[in-house]
Length: 254
Image 1 (cartoon, one colour):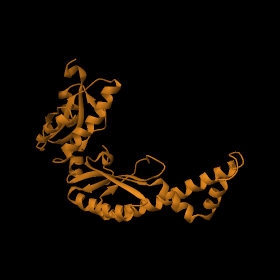
Image 2 (cartoon, helix red, strand yellow; image 1 turned 180 degrees about the vertical axis):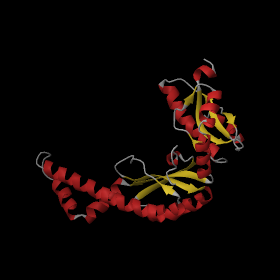
Image 3 (cartoon, one colour; image 1 turned 90 degrees about the vertical axis):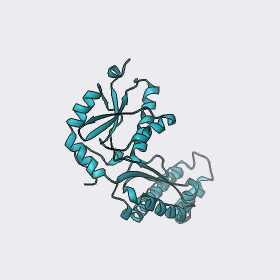
Image 4 (cartoon, rainbow, N blue to C red; image 1 turned 135 degrees about the vertical axis):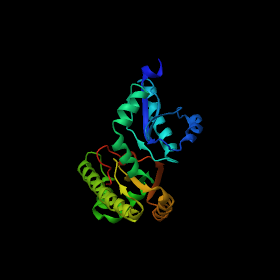
């Protein structure tokens, strides 16, 4: 099957004069060979689309990040949603770059000098439960009560214990999450939130950050992580394209 029959997979859009020559260096890391299709002052990062079997789809998901994240090192990128395929390179130029020229230029202007960082914070399970039990007399009482007697005899107490623990974790999560975000508010342009990946996750927060302030953000979060070392684990991912701050109608932070 030739490239035209497969279609062309579009990763993202950059300015036509963007410096992305280094992308070829990442081919050995599993990233595909990327072509540029230009239309006026815009260019799209494209590659022939693969098949639709499970292995091909998985590889396309991985390739999406392997292409866009290195591109973000040296260029402003408007990331396309996963799975955007056009019939051929000519159609990419006409139906994407030309047809949506003004919207794409507007997004590139808005994103200029910005990257996304994603902050993930999670409680250490045993540590947060220990704190909750120590601070909530009823939880401590029920925990002791459920350690005695049969499963049937302690059923109601165990249900109530679970409810109280879940409520306490949620209350603590909201407070701790807001405290962390408030501590970095001056370093971010915008924040949003994604679904928690586990019941003990405090934050799963994409952050829009000025590129020149990334190191300052890293230093601040390192300090916050050290202060909370026994209770939480911090992970900061990026820089990456502003996946969570792009819409065709209006940038999320405007």
